[in-house]
Length: 290
Image 1: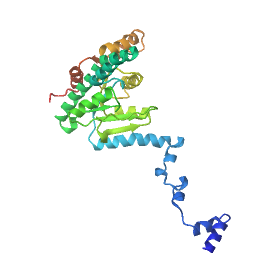
Image 2: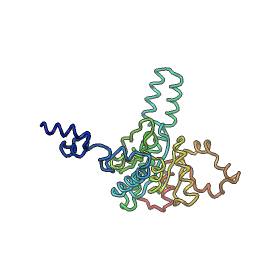
Image 3: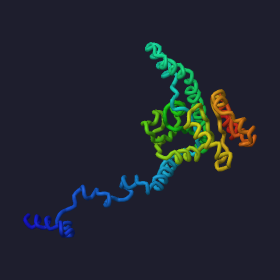
Image 4: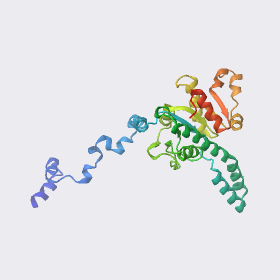
């Protein structure tokens, strides 16, 4: 013991002697420099390793979906803020009891918008019903951003039919969890918006955009731009909720001022009925009745 103590003291001046005499502790083995690079979380989160993180976000969901036979999807976008009819009615009843004017106005708006939730759910049921009756290579799967509102409604519709359904969630400043209707093995979380949007398009056979905010507009116009510029293959782009979309965006102005060609408007279709939206997709691909 005395010799060991002397070596330990002397180790301050003689590092090699200290390492030979005193075994490595668990703490020393966990030091950043000693960790394997791919198991070093702090290293992987450095600014310089951003390219690696982007590659991993690209690869993981792609491999997982391929392994589970998710090759073709119908992507549904829309507001995360819309409530189901049941939730909206509960909000309205509570607001009527409370008597707060602002709360009442919000609840009444939620009741009006709940039809979009119902329509997204019904549309997804139609897609899932077709898929379940089709050969594996012809199946279409509902894919959303994985969050609440319209995304939840579409995932819910597919879930209720017993079909797998995907959710591509995103980390946000306020905590957001995947809705309960996403198939757990198809529930993915992204850090980078760009990679998430790329995954939406990699398997998309159609895009159905329900009323939504900045996020919905961002995703919608990226798809329109990629199809217009032939960076992506043509797919049906369906705006659900004609009144909302035509009040929000006057596409005719773009043609009148020469910023797009008249035929570019043919990239977009409008509808207000779940069955009609599904028929638009079926007609585009000449899908048979199932």
